Length: 163
Ligand SMILES: NC(=O)c1ccc[n+]([C@@H]2O[C@H](COP(=O)([O-])OP(=O)(O)OC[C@H]3O[C@@H](n4cnc5c(N)ncnc54)[C@H](OP(=O)(O)O)[C@@H]3O)[C@@H](O)[C@H]2O)c1
Image (cartoon, rainbow, N blue to C red; front, side, top):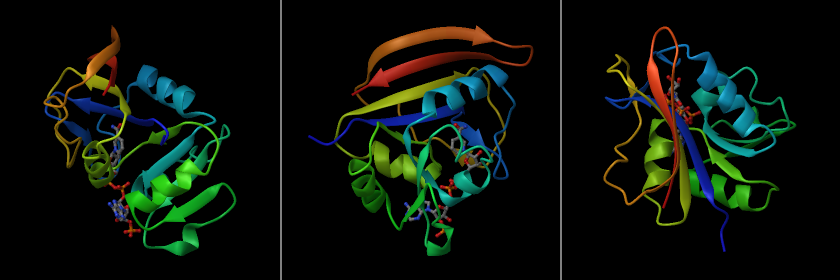
């Protein structure tokens, strides 16, 4: 049995999740949850996500970076050339698998027919940006968890969905 894949994302109602290689907002509660939830896990992520996440290698995370640049390999960082190769490597490593983007990687993983859990922070706003989370609403999810929250700028809901 392959391991359960977890996808973790914060996206707006219009599916925007990034702008100019950064997050399109600063939501401290979501950032805190993201760091806590991914600590100690095996993380699959694209090169830009890796290069723009300064704390990626901290807190016991084991990283698998999808890139054509093998020179990024170092202690705590494996390199894979494709999603399939990254998931094969992840199967051999301890701990749960967390996929943290970006856009193409989320798309390829959501298209797989294997068990997965989506840790979604849905930000209740339409936001401008250039990276989108792929459409997920039509897939047959079962809702495991939901919590609403807000700060001075946004209302948002934390979901855990499974299929
Ligand atoms: N809100 C959120 O939760 C969230 C989550 C994730 C990302 N984001 C946002 O999304 C943006 C970053 O994501 P991104 O989509 O631009 O970039 P990315 O996926 O992090 O990095 C793109 C690079 O990764 C490699 N790559 C990606 N998919 C690949 C595939 N299927 N096969 C082979 N190589 C692949 C390529 O690397 P090489 O060029 O080195 O070959 C590609 O140039 C940022 O704005 C970030 O803030 C937001």
